Length: 145
Image (cartoon, rainbow, N blue to C red; front, side, top):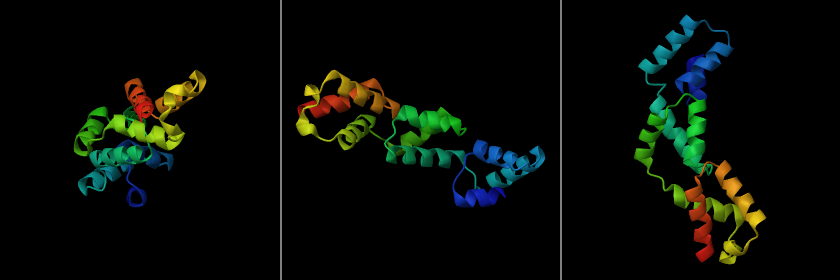
């Protein structure tokens, strides 16, 4: 059963344990299945962390959002930071690209937008997991273009 789940998509160890428990597997069976998957390298939390990071960046999520999603799936921040070292993302540029894609170019006049609209953009970027420094960079970069 565990191999079938892993054949469809990669899972973290925690996710796989939860899914097997939902199917009324005994704790001994779950441990045996996990150990077998780890032995054959079908289950690898570090590989899953790298995949999760790539997917989060592809979806336009910032580091904070990706960390939150990873913790829910049983991936530690250390594992995610290790994956980050291998991929090297510029979070400031990602925030800028997302702002341009989401809000349009506005002829480079983000500074001329009223406070209410600008606050809406800040909330949106923050909900995507970007820090306020990254958000300020993204919106200020569009001011000067």
